[in-house]
View 1 (cartoon, one colour):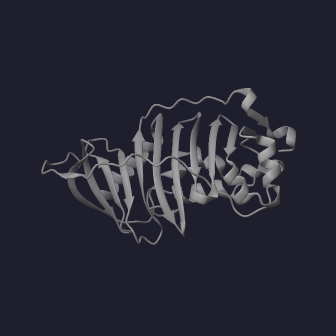
View 2 (spheres, rainbow, N blue to C red):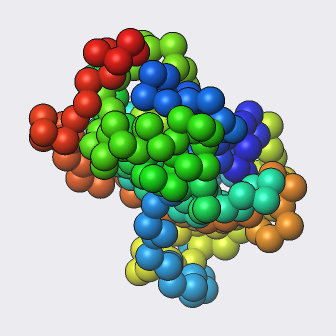
Length: 257
């Protein structure tokens, strides 16, 4: 469920893409980069419920499709989670405001933290020292000294930023794949009635048990071939986008970006 073109959460690939971005003139020349954030609060264990769900007439695949469409159309959405894929521990916390941008933090454990704010066609990037050390090779010290904790401002169109805008695109992060889906029981999760749906990759999806289903949480089990982890989805979560203060920004276009 955490891989591109299969399963509903394609976040791992997008996070890895963020890590692979070369930050151009500020200093780049090492290995692929990365990201990190605060882990989401743990969800309570679902308790059983025998109540008949209003989604009885829909197939599991149809419920998933409707939840995908709802997430993409939502005015705002927040995704928080942790993933382990190919030996890397990734975390994500991104709040998206449809058509306007996003703000979040992405990480890969020892490879550092990357904070990101996207407003319209402008990106503000704030990698930490650990990020530069792990990913900028011999240019790490220069990058750390130049930015000194400040944000790097660059246009989304910059060739070095290819793929970064995907982190603000719900359709790129959540989407139907080639999995098959099977309905489970109706239960509760953090006090909300949810329908459990299993996918052919072994993942478990919790969706609101309402006539308009929404994602609540997705879990990929330990040993899953495409990564293990949990992502919490908050459709309609409040999102405020604000550019960093000018004193905390370095204009990348003046550095040749």
